Length: 69
Image (tube, rainbow, N blue to C red; front, side, top):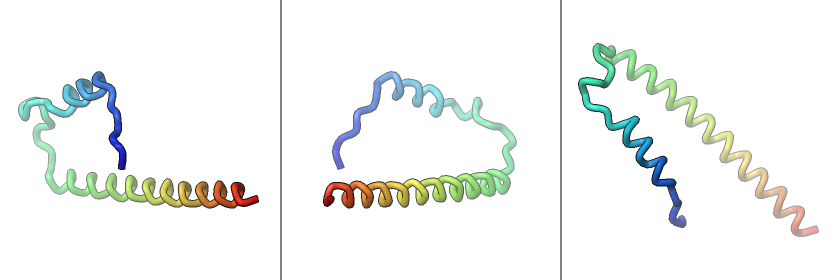
């Protein structure tokens, strides 16, 4: 794969958002509830990925058919 370019501002924004000290992180979060939430989110994201992957393959197939005409 080729190199992806990311805007420097985006990097700083992500760093500020996700590098909060532990004391600012969620306090008292139930680990079991958090695992359930993360599993549900993983399932949703996996389904979205699969849909996009199928759409990409379908789109590429149509492009190849059109080019052969």
